[in-house]
Image 1 (cartoon, rainbow, N blue to C red):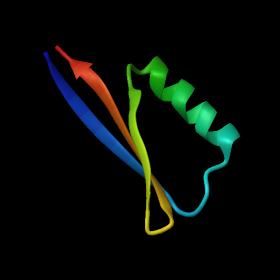
Image 2 (cartoon, rainbow, N blue to C red):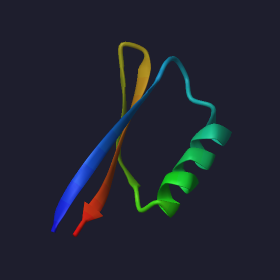
Image 3 (cartoon, rainbow, N blue to C red):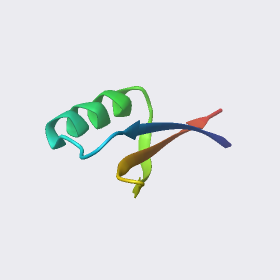
Length: 52
């Protein structure tokens, strides 16, 4: 088993409604949120999914 990763950077604050929609859309494609953190005022989201 191996994992593949994708990142998304949101400038400034996150709209929680848009975040929820994005998480649900990505979840349907097999992605899950691995990490979320802020860097220089931006929100960085790291997604992962299993690749077989």
